[in-house]
Image (tube, rainbow, N blue to C red; front, side):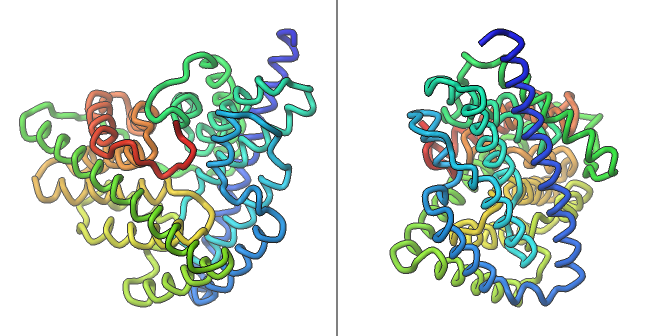
Amino acid sequence: MNLFHKLCLYSLVGILAGLSSALLILSLQYVTEIRLAHVELVWFLPVAGFVSGWMYTRFGKNVSSGSSLIFEEIHDPKQALPLRFAPLVFINTILTHLFGGSAGREGTAVQMGASLADQLSKVFNLAKEDRPTLLRMGLSAAFGSALGAPWAGALFGMEVTKRGRLYYQKIWECIFASWVGYGVAHGILLWLHERPDYPSIEVVDYNVKTIFSVLVLGLMTGIWARLFSKMVHYLEHFLQRKFSLSWQMCVGGAVLVLFYSLFGQQYAGLGIPMIQQSIDKSVSIQTPFLKTIATVVTVGSGFKGGEFVPLVFIGTGLGSALAGWLKVSVPLLASLGFGAVFAGAANVPLTCAVLLMEIFGSKIGIYALLVCYLSYFVSGRRSIYKGQK
């Protein structure tokens, strides 16, 4: 393949990821507004779960493992992902959020980006050994476009399948695809004024108290990430032994309805307003604790959407609560928590450290690296993603 064809291929990977990420973000904002306007929709979450499970059983049994299937194809390529992969995960993520599941969107974005990228292997008649590069580019472009963080996106495609180690061989391809995806999605969302706004951290103290607080936050987020991964996988295995996919999602939905009846619907969906509130002022430790329960039930029972934004919610809540206890800067610790739990739970410390610098500014760079790598080391090799090596 000559240089022109390569650039066309890489550009198409980024464009498809950017378009699908923008569509997903806008769609989730729309259905979230519907759910907030009609809070009674949460009562139908068990039905939505049953329908989602039936859809995967009927039309997507071989793609229901989601990210795990993508990682398997990267490590041992066999055949291109089915075209129905992307629409299935998109539709079921919409159902999750419309009826109040506590899930994210980046998990869906990266699955859509990788599966759409893989379709290009047929168009360009790529050899089997070239497909892993295409899939990594799709992961990078989708993550970077969904988060508005192209450098973190590039690193994600190289780091997520290697448990914290970087796959350097295809660095330029991942960077190119991530920036194209970011440009497409950012242009669409900026045009529609649909980007969440987070404050830039301009003042960073390096006194003993602040350094100690960051170290404690790294330990807390690492432990929390390890427990979160264990609870999700335990619940998955328990429900899979007891029920079919449709019924395990129905049971999970019923538990969530009871949970929201007891603790409120602020823990449903993405929870971006709560994330912003946690960065502005100190919150109770109850906030990340309850979000953890809601997300474990949602993801562990099979609802689609991913874990990233809920883990951001949990991490900012932990940082915010810790800052209140130790009387240090709430915006600083909350913003560091923003990426620290996911760094440990997904084994992507460098990705998350760079993500924090892209979102909150380069001045938190030293602390971002410290807290993300500490969380990663404390959390161990257990991950929310199956198929990592």
